[in-house]
Image (tube, rainbow, N blue to C red; front, side, top):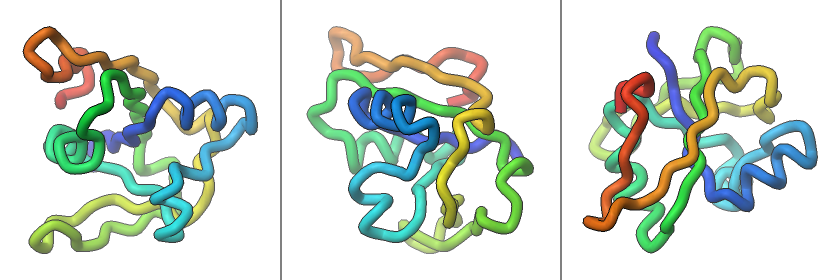
Length: 115
């Protein structure tokens, strides 16, 4: 299983850094799990849930480090998404990427993300 990604607003990332753990965004907390996306799901997730955001933080995580707390569950037409039913320890984050919109309104992703 390849790398999975968590998309955050910058303020949510700063809060996680201050706490030393990511408990999730308000929607994650309301749903009872942290929403992740595969590389091929990231762009659609941003389009659906982060309209109007000019900057975002993209965290990469190796799913093998998350153990049994990570479940792959159907969403969006039965497509499986990774959901973490535990806080994310910051040492489990393998990459941190700052994303900003280009003049044409699209986010550019570093090549190493595979997004």
